Image 1 (cartoon, rainbow, N blue to C red):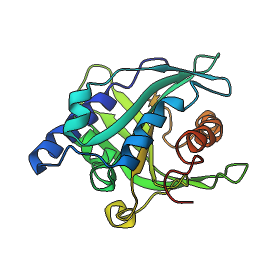
Image 2: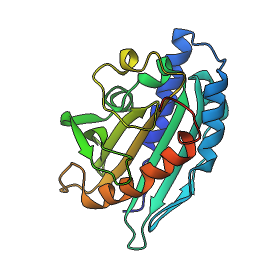
Image 3: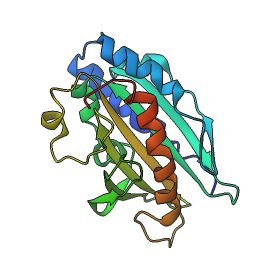
Length: 218
């Protein structure tokens, strides 16, 4: 499938509203600024996956205290596609508002429960641990289903924490990554081979761009 999962944008909108309601500050530390600027250095291709950037409203990002955001749709030559959203900011705002909260606010329901998933990476970059869940939007003419992975990192190692606000509180900045894939009506949820293939190409590129230059913790 090639349709872009634009509920990603709806989730950002929900984060914005919550952030504004909580009165979050809009200032960013030097570390947050540096990490946000380096998002653009993440390579536009990951192996055979070609990425296409998507714009986001900068005012919404600032209201949610997101220092920087990289939103791309990646497509393989065979037509398989997925969307990534990588955000950076202070640990407090970035650690909260997970898909089980944001997508519920956009009318989606969680199928089953979220589960941890580990991906082994080569070259000393892994393992990478993600939360994985499937969301469905009922009551529409054509059912919409998404399989979503999400994880956090302040050092280049990706982790799926029970309490990310506490776990990452001491980090100078924090990144959160979403990987979103549209599912067909009868397609089983879970992490499939192409998604794993993509992440094994993509995550080392993120580490090189954001962390290997000395940002975050070694």
